[in-house]
Amino acid sequence: KQEVTQIPAALSVPEGENLVLNCSFTDSAIYNLQWFRQDPGKGLTSLLLIQSSQREQTSGRLNASLDKSSGRSTLYIAASQPGDSATYLCAVDNAGNMLTFGGGTRLMVKP
Amino acid sequence: NAGVTQTPKFQVLKTGQSMTLQCAQDMNHEYMSWYRQDPGMGLRLIHYSVGAGITDQGEVPNGYNVSRSTTEDFPLRLLSAAPSQTSVYFCASSMGETQYFGPGTRLLVL
Image (cartoon, rainbow over all chains, first blue to last red; front, side, top):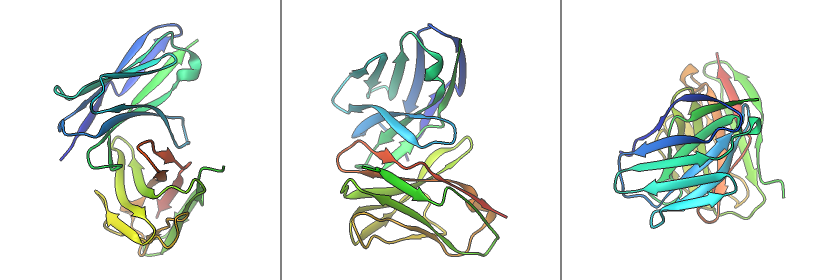
């Protein structure tokens, strides 16, 4: 059974800092890995999707990497802003649109 | 497009009551799914559907029923609510690999 773990569970940083969120998974036979953002009381917004054959994806200040063999992914956020404050969720797709989620990292960026 | 919509936003039930959580999407997506989100446990898949008339169980299906009579709608039914079903429920849809989530329904079972 796939298990997804995210570390740290919570993170507080000053504005402008570069930061890395970590995600690990136990079964490397994946279709893709996705990073989502969730604001309090809201649904999930897809940020980046990395195919199993890819090593990384970039969107603006966000960069996600994937090391399938070691079961790890990182989400790098450059020059963090208070508007980046949210919970970030990592999810692994093992069987075609059936996602296994990590518990999330709650990020607070202080002005 | 409205995307994925869910109703109601919040509901309080008594143990043993039944209810239906509604989910609709206007993007003509074939794949739809239901997840529940509990504190510290992330989201877990309840049921999913790959098209009208086709449904299957996810990781935590017990206590929930689904049907898919149209491409647009995918309701989730609780036949006899239990306190363990207190959670936030999210519906999602996709055509390819990117999933679009609704705003969620917060359910409290007393």
